[in-house]
Length: 396
Image (tube, rainbow, N blue to C red; front, side, top):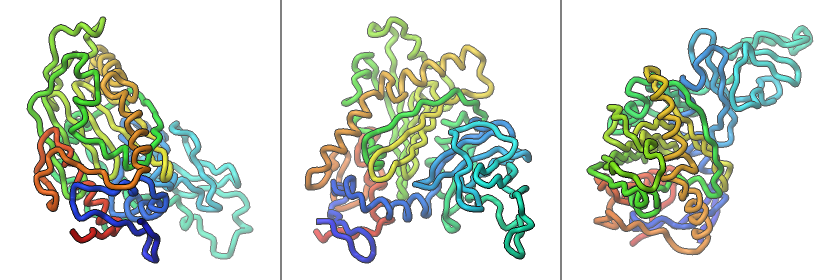
């Protein structure tokens, strides 16, 4: 049984690589360790695309673990990410999800910051402590790197640069999801809350899609050739052809399934970066799913949809219709996911292990070569998690 020692929560991890203890989804005491070792550790987390805050003064609020943060487009054209806290007494500065400001003011004592995070005004400063210097009270900034217009943050000073962290097998297809050149414009958002632990959400696999999602059968939609690529540090990449029938009787208007042939994929391209961000280009939909755990239970996911800057009006309308109606949280293809995440959460309150089967060739070895629809592609992600958390495998 799990027990808590001096080094944090303890958990008996099975000797077999294809077995995951169900308790890992249910132990609330894991959350503080996950914050320290994953969300505040040596990992990169995507926060915002430049298309979401394209103009000086635009900002977007987000969370890194439990830490409130916000990204802001400075007057100098740079995008910075700050901790969402006044450097005086800690009051949060940004309360809206997004907007535009010429400057950032704390409502408590009217301390004023510019868009570059500098403290530029504070009432009654002549009565402050001896040696007070406004330069010492700039907003705390996070380490930031950009790729194809997408800005990633980390609390770590030691994690590898972003491209090295992602690896070529991930950042090359990611560039295609981001329009090939990152020149995107925001269409809009959908936001959904899932009733599960965050790890149940990111344990989605390539095995379930044609079996769970009824729309594939309803639309007589067949998959073609494809690949699944995994990395030792838990990133996943799926790419597959789509064979769409010419006659679609299940829909009055089948144009939602039109594939305009945008050149950055053969039909479906889905990526997941560790720990839990999903990126997808399904047909002509361009999508980033920012996910924010709400502690050990509950997850809020923001679906951000994009068009390319070069799209004409007709193409933008097509992307809008295809985005939410196909792979949005209540889209034709993915509406069953919310129910499954909740049922995983309930079912894992029972003892024992979750046991992966499809694609597992050796239960005592970690697979790094997997098939398109194998569930074994999730196992490197779990192994990376196990190592980060410091759980030892039991002896076989």
